[in-house]
Image (tube, rainbow, N blue to C red; front, side, top):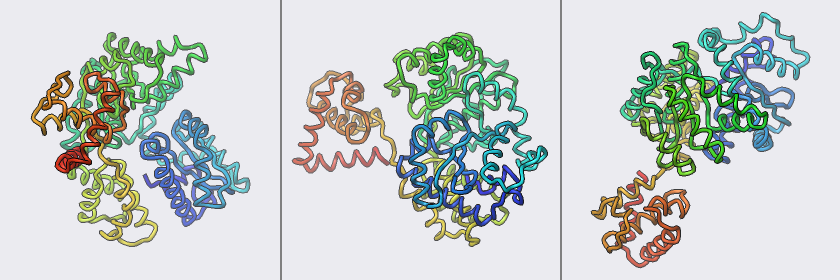
Length: 503
């Protein structure tokens, strides 16, 4: 989100010492730094650790950055501070260090951050006790106030992440690709008497397709009913469990976790470690047996979580598993239009024509986060240059998003189904022990495509093909590679299969 106004949340403009032009310049530099981070680290790492890293101010050669949680602050400081500083210095030579703080809508931490920035500017007047209400948007205070006490209690006890106030059912845009997931989430959130249904509800989708939005929406609705909710990412679950072991409070951690009404766990594919997985499995069993609701999200279905214990995968697959599909063009256009209308309330002169919206919806097909990025780029162009948004300027503004668009993630199951259909055999034939020529050649082609189109290892591919040894997969790959160099018809056939899988 474009946040040029956010730099004024600590103090009124007259007190901050910044001119609007310098704020805009700092925002431009920070946007370039984030683009460098995205390009250098990749979309997955950037989205996981830097998507919510924001710039508050640049004071006396120090860039003050904020994140929403202490865990995120600790992780970035431990692993990425030097890299962020180096990239920042490449864009702004006067920046000599970066400081990362935890932002919050509560008075205590907000005041602490104001003191951090004001301390760097000793000549600036200190904010008074009455400054806080005027320095924070009233609408934000009103929307968050009812949930703060319970949310802080959950976070303090279990390390749960706060629910994003923007991610509600009202702000979720429903289309053909996500209608089933939305309906299931709504049913779980509004279950009568808190009765657990579809337990667990398991949502899976690629990056930026709305599964996390639905998780937060469920959490908001259930919490509004006065029930106990905890929202955890896989990282937070692992961190909380390991911390409780070190502090010898693991029993208390387990009891508190199993005493809630709704457990929301995001990015479950990242849960690692035998002992942590065992505890996760015990927690699932305990909550489900007690009639408590569980909602889980991942980037793949439970059967593809090969790093997870088989019993945990089975438990996750025992509820309702729903895929959030790719955004179709009509849904992408609706998301863009809604986002633009929301920004017009803040920037009345921000106008985007229907033809530009249509162009962006056609050009950006990957996910909702890229659509958000496109709107931010259009807003930055309009507010920084003062010129109208045309098709030509839109094309320039979103060029990097179109160029860096991620290819479709191909699944081994999809490869098996397509090859089986193409060669008139069944998928069960490909997975079987049959050795007839009509089955062996399609099986080898499917193994070859699994090796070149996915990131799976040879042993993983072997397991997905009926539990075969990795040497069998290697033999198949080498045999097809050799045949492709000798048989032009086979080469054309395999290329066609590749295109069909990647479209």
